[in-house]
Length: 416
Ligand code: PMP
Image (cartoon, rainbow, N blue to C red; front, side):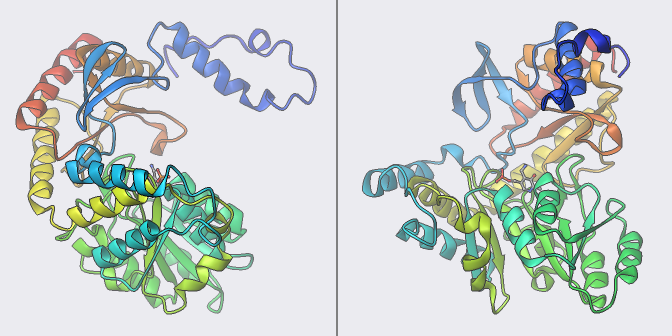
């Protein structure tokens, strides 16, 4: 990318023996060295020395406002959540030391699954150790060799990895393009097993999928539908069930995937479903069977948080307000944003290139603001993005402080 000094290849890659397994990383190593040589702080090596609240931490000795944590509902410091975690830690110990199908199912795992069933109003819930494993497990188990997975090209890595693990045929379609999805589905043999995988909110640009139409064309083609609601759970929809709820199509979704690492405020993943045979998954899904279950303190915090999120409408309203204020403020300052209107709690600020993006990221950090730097190849259209994710616990005053920081940093770096 323009402006980043690239160490010339022979020198950087000198000393590699033939067949060196690390040779495949040489280009990335050179890119990283180039970025650090330009003098910026390493954007991928930040340490939070102390965390003060869902919206504040001490980073590199500075008090910093957090605007890139996916902690949408600010549940990480909720008193009831912390109390539940402490109690479970004391009563049940620090870990289960076992798989869910052996010695790793405690009362707390069942209570967590009950909370999820109630939250979504669905018959079955299965808790995984991470959201990554939930996608990996469900997709690889239901879509095997000879089956087709039709997915949005901007799908999360865990979705692609699930397809690879199951060895299904991957059929990508253009991001959020209903017609492209329909065309792809028509080309697949009518009697083949088909799974359409969608996300409610796409985390790079913070845009929402047209699930209603997409689910309609998927069902017409006889496909099952899986929706990853990682970035919408707790926030979008009347009860915070996500984009499918908001668009009135939750009943048509076969599998909802979610995570505890965002709105729920801890770690873990899940799948909820009304499929009558869903429980068989517990025996055949390898990323569920062959790994240790979540610690009792984690499932206790998750269950408490999920139950509180059912009654989180005031928090949801404030989070929408924050999203609208930040989006309008950044737009008025002259920043280029990922969406014309705020669609979620993620607001992506598009940077002209990686160098300016890294400089802007650092300038914001020095102002006392943390955002996520996202760069190619992880981003759509090879964009460099500063991704902001808002929290229901950001006050009005914090949002206006954030806008002041963006204004000063943007002017200093020469972006606005
Ligand atoms: N799906 C999506 C869309 C995500 O963005 C993420 C995490 N960023 C995951 C799944 C994985 O969640 P977890 O952090 O629980 O592994």
